[in-house]
Image 1 (cartoon, rainbow, N blue to C red):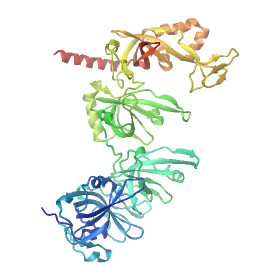
Image 2 (cartoon, one colour):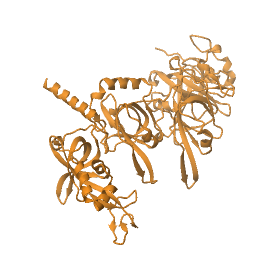
Image 3 (tube, helix red, strand yellow):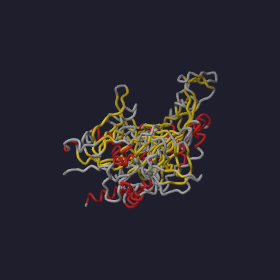
Image 4 (cartoon, one colour):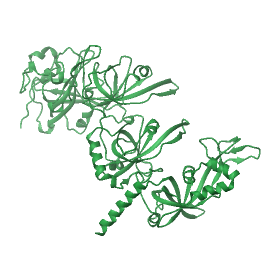
Length: 615
């Protein structure tokens, strides 16, 4: 079937008018180098009457050229475009979306005898074939202006792809009128634009210092009906905009620099990102339209195992359990930060560990098992699959989105009775029965030969302490926070640390406690280091060290009172060889009081499983 080109469409597009879905033919394609970014493709297009070589393909359409879907002589329908006016007055048509109606193999050659278009003859071209108004009165949907002299981009959209009113003329609080364009239309070839967007994420101010000087920066993420984009402010712009911009508020943004986005540091779905400069303006929008909030592209937890390490992903899950906040010291900066692991489960029945840092860890409240949506979490392959929250990540509790409502309904009716399957082998664990889902009895651990493989195995169990070996359970260690090396008594009131190569007038006590735990089926010797040992004994190491030196009877009572108490243990097992003798070494990674409500639920679920197998 013959395809008819939309004659006169090129003239209308260049004049700023909006022909509906024009059908054009690609005459020629030329690649243009763009530095470190993706290549750009310049097209010579024909409408059967005129040709124009100022068509540029948006980078998201590059695969159509690279796989030869778009090639010379093919016929295309342009669904979405913008017209940019350069500083020298030339106009460039940027194609944002198009469909190939006929491939080059099905077109005998150039259609018609088109001549190169020039603006002087624009008014003499044939009218565009359209079912509604003639070309001289083409309606410009969404409020795009049709004046040829303007330098504001003009955007074409198919009716099914409209995004509210992204290009309506709006009034700023100062009373001036601005023409708003959608985020999806932004590109580095535009000189004047204004967007209206909601801020969905805002980082803290970060500083740097190197050979070139010092500085500071912060970044934001914003969204409108058409898409999202990231923006970064440096030094002077930090002072100017940081206090002004608030998460959730809507602003007019204009005159920022656009560049190719570095996908390594952001999960925002946009080929470009902004950098604020001295001419950038940010104006609050009081007549807030119904703009969306954070845009997610959720990935099922079960599919994380198929993604590459360090990928940035969006997930949603119910907080099955969470750990207490802990303080760790970052070796590179010697700075103490808060850390907390939470465990999320979705409708796939899979559970993943997510690490929160800093303020997110301190303020997190997992009571009530909230639904948590995370945008831009980094995927790690340490101990299975786990996620970590970055400074650029966005985390929302109980978001007002359909996926959240669906997951809540599923969890309340079905999910809360499921044990789930963890894809994370964490060193820590949640209390009771949430995040640590590899539940075993001690007899099962031995029968299944856990720990005999190339990698260590992790499991959780409910165990009772039946014996504690107090001999040699403590040692005198280096008093510095980052070092736990044993010190040597110099017999002169000083204690030497070989690792630090220093002598100290004091020391701290560290613990390595051997314990025998048991359940109804078997028992197991385990090694408990500082935190686990203190949790079992109910006293800190320094206090126990003082008791050992001053009150041996009280020291003995601490160990006696700790016997025959039950805990939830998270244990690492690995076959180790010493002096040609191989044996299983079991190390307690975490110990917490038993959450009997969760434990009872798990027991009842196991009973139902066994009952169904016997029927």
